[in-house]
Image (cartoon, rainbow, N blue to C red; front, side, top):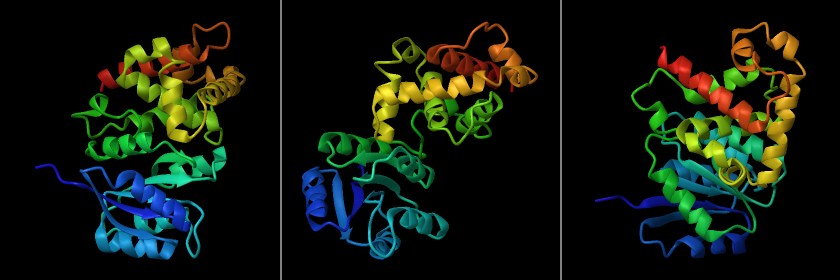
Length: 260
């Protein structure tokens, strides 16, 4: 029998806490373990209950949301839950910092309850924990981390890790590895999927990936001295489009994975 998804809700605003609880409490497979109004209390409740999912605000008293994730991650004795951020603080640098700190998804307030419920189920139906596009592409290959390989490739091609488009490009490549046909409808499939995860618009995803590619292309002379640069950019006479770049990187990764 499938176990219920065990959830803790953490937000310093009483009305928001009640709204979150009311929005998901009628789901038969969800179990609300506890609620918290500050970061310290959240950490203690996570240690006590070991939930599957924590719905977490970033701006809370005593310890903020980032501090909560850091404290739980550093406590190697306990289970690390999935963190879903539900916050009004939605600047892109904040979203990126939250995801870097261990959040699986980021929802801007006000949020869509249906989308939140779907994300909770998607996360808890995926074992082991997976990022946005990891699944069959990585099965039976524990020594190979597609996300690490992708990020390494992107850096070697000259896209700085500090750029917002860097993360978006990694996710786009990973989606293409898992769903090769998605590249055909990049604007209808890939950009919206990434935008939903990062709490931004598909247009913004497209633009930031394009900026990242432009930055990489501006370093073409030095990049062409690397194996990766020669193999991916070698036949290009002009800057590749987003879809061309994403597809070329995914094909390169698949080819070199097959030779391992």
